[in-house]
Each structure stands twice: as structure tokens, then as C-alpha cells.
Length: 626
Image 1 (tube, one colour):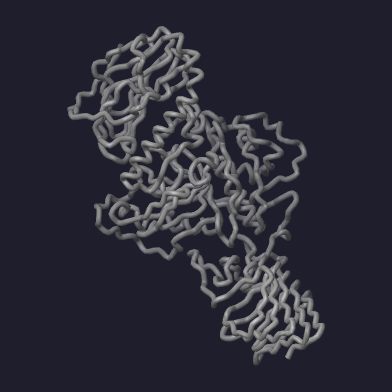
Image 2 (tube, one colour):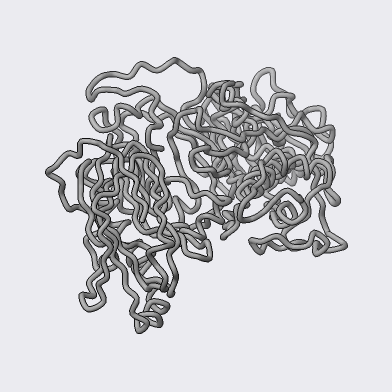
């Protein structure tokens, strides 16, 4: 057996500290076979040939040895066993969050190899980063009687291991007051071979990302500056708003549903179409929530392969630009490539995108934010070899409370999180299902150089069933400003619609949005979107916006003061029912209604006239306007 030796001074006083559970250990004394390696030291990646060692198939493989990490951030070790069919199994993995010491010993540990479906080992691949591993012995079982038991136990055993690791991570994350928490997810339960397919043939070191359930995940070694505790981090000033989230803009969630790419390296397709689906919503200013066909991209782009060759979002968007994209019902996703001709012959919808821009991280964080304020962006994280949708961001500030689920809250403080304060955490939408992260979303901090494959969709959308005349313009909050989506003011907008769009059409107190995401603050206002009655004699200084579905009935005397005025929007109704509206400033919008009855009176303010444009319904049953 060939051995590779690296002569290094190995530090003593190691501790046992990992995988202390029956799901990982070799306990069958009657079937204990051992290969003593003496000392197989590896610093860096190496291959250990087992072809001459194993002539028979085995039902379990375990390793013992020692590890020394160089740091408590991005060190890691991993041991993978390959069998004669080139299937790979994860034997062992360690990174700082799984341990409480940088120097430790592990004994008779097997992760996926704790129960094997009768395989013949070919080699061990040892992967390390900023770490030294000394593998001193292998243990294996060849008991044929364990075969059926292993096949039955493999899934349950993997789930038990996942629970153990998730609990171990949470213990360490809690003790060190880290900004995220772990749990069981879709990807955490995948085998190593399944993860290879998911990541296009190469599994990155995830440092617990597969167990992420919420909070701010800090990519190891992603901090640009090493900051001593209690020292202040000086950040460059920025004019950009501190937080942005396309799941809550104008009172709406513009993102479409979370998908699951399954065991196919199709993240580039999900990233491109996830951003495009949101862009369509914004383009038409409607929650159309198209579900576009990722299957068309992976089946009709010839260079794509689920297991080995992914696609960039640029390739995906170019395809949509040139060929259009059908919806999910026309070509359903199956997580493997099909014949492109299996796409339905008479699609009910085909979407084309006009164009897109490639964004390089070197353009800077502020440039990325400027594009993100326009619409969600397809992008990727290089160290994960994974593409996602950039949905928003937040500037991490001291005192921020990060809520994870219903029970856990983490408060950002200068002692534990000073290296994060002032940094930008990016909000991303993933394609690993809703049980990963916060219902499929995550906040992630990483060095900007780790942001790759980033694009900004721009220009018009073409559709078989929709046109630009279907773009909705709305004043949902009654402030007099309209929102019409992400493009220029639609040609179907009436001339009286202001040229400046509303920056937040869900809040009457905010007006236009500047290029940095900051909102113009308006005088105090109230949106009336349901039936309201003012029966007492009173004064108000609020701007009142009566919107679709809302009505204001005045039965007493209401006096408008200061900046107060009443705007009756399309679908809104103002009723003066035996009452009096004093010092009135009223704007009626086409599609609105005014009703005066029971001797009701409107006394207009000095210099103000009552106007009823075409399309306004005025009904004076018994009363008057002065």
C-alpha cells in the first residue's frame, strides 16, 4: 500500500470532541477489521489508493486519526471514499463550528459509510484547507448479514446524523452568539453523490450552510478586515437606504414561490427565471406570479448537463431573449434533461425579455445596490458554486434584532459582532425548497469578490397575451402619486397622472423615491380603504385618501385644517350625510363618487373650487356645495 508522508511537527494534547453518537461509530466487535496505516499525514488534497486493499465488498467503513486546524474560521477537512463504480461516499468531515478545539482526535467515525449497501472501495480522497490531518487507521465490516439492515437503516441513519449535527451546530452557534441557526433541511439530508449532482459535479465546503434555517450566515473568511473586539470599524459613508426587500415594496411581495431544483445542477436556470418572474410582476405592476419553465432551459440548451455542466444566468437569459420561455405547465420540471421536443406544441404563453446587463463585483457595492433598487438580480456565490436571486440587502447595525423562527432572537452587539457592524448582508432567494433558510430565503454576508455571475434584466417584456397597455397604474394609498412598475410612465396613463412615480404606494406618508432608495416624507395622512364614518364635530390636519373599497361618511361637522385635504380615488366614495365639511379642499379622480344627502353641506376653503372631472359621479340628493 502506497503511503504519502508530510513531515510536520504535530502538536500533542488532542481532545475527543466530535460525532460522539452511535450513528457515526463502529461498535461491532465481532466484525471488526482494521487496517493500521501507521501515520498518513496530509496537508492539502491527496488520494489514498485502496484498490489493492479491498478485494471484497464491505458494509461499513470508519476512520480514526487526528486533525489540527490553522484557524477557527475557514479551516476544514473532508474524507471521501470512492467505490469501483465511481460512486462517492462521505466518510468524514470537520470544520471549526463542529468543534470546540483546533486540535482533536476522532475515532472510528463513519458518516455515510457507517452503513454501506455492499460496496467495494477504490480510493480515499482527503481534502483539507488550512488544516493538517493524520489518518492512522481504517475500520471496516464485511458481514453479509448487515446488508439488508444497512439498506433499511441508511435513510434513517442519515437523518439521525443530521439531527445530531444540527444540534451540535446550534449548541456552538448559541454559545458563541453567532448570527444564524441550524436545522434539518432538504439539502442536509442529501448524500454526497446527490450533492455532487446538485452542485454540478463538485461539492464545495459549505461550513454548515446545508443546515441553515435563518439569521445572517457569514461565509467563512468573508470578512474583509480583521477587527479586534471592542474596536470600532470605520465604514465608508453611503447615501443608500439601510434596507431593501422586494418581498415588501409598495405593500406587496413581488417574488414568486420558492422552488426546489432537486438533484440537478440547474441553479443557473432557477436564478435567471426567479429574477425574471419578479421582473414580470414589476413590469406589469401586478402579481401575475408566472411560473416559468426551468425544464425548457435545461432540456433545450445543448451545453447543459445536470450532473457535470451547469449554465450561467447569462446563457439562460440569452435563450429567453432569442427563443422565449414557456410556463411550467407547458414543460414541467423533472430535474433531468429531456428531449426539447417534449415541450408542449401549443403553449398558452411565451415570454421574451428585451435584454440584460452583466454586472461585475468590481463595479462596487453601491452599483449593485443601484441595480437592485430597480429589480431583483440573478447572481451567484462563487465559493458555493451556486446561483441564486438577489432580493435585497440590509446594513447590519448595532442593536439590530435578528428573529429566527418564533423563539430565537439574536441582538447585534459590538462585543460579539463588531466585525459585522456596518457591513451589508445580502438577502437571497434560493432554490432548495421552503424548509431551507427562512422559508427559502437567507441573509448572507460575504466579501464582495465572492459575488459572481450577476446580471440586471432590463427593457421590455413581450408576451403572447399581455401588452404594455396592461401595465397597471395605481394610487393605492391616496397620496396623489401613482406607481406603474419599473419602466417609464405608461402611455395609457391619463395626462393628470404625475410624471414622478410613487416611491411607496402603500403608505400615504411617503412620496417619491430618490436614486438611493430614500423616500420623500409627506405631510401626515390617512388612507381610507374601508367604510369610515365621522359622526362627531371635530377638526383634522391629516391628508385623507379614499381609495378603492373605501368610503368616508360625514354626519357631524368636520373641519379641515393645515395641510389637510381629501382625495377621492378611483373606486372611493365621499358621503356628506346630514353633516358639514368645512374649509374643504377636495380632489375627485375619475371613477370616484360624491354623494350629498339629508341637507349635507360642503363649504370649500378660500381660493378652492370644487371640480368634478369626466368620469366622476356626483349625486346631490338634498344638500349643497358652497
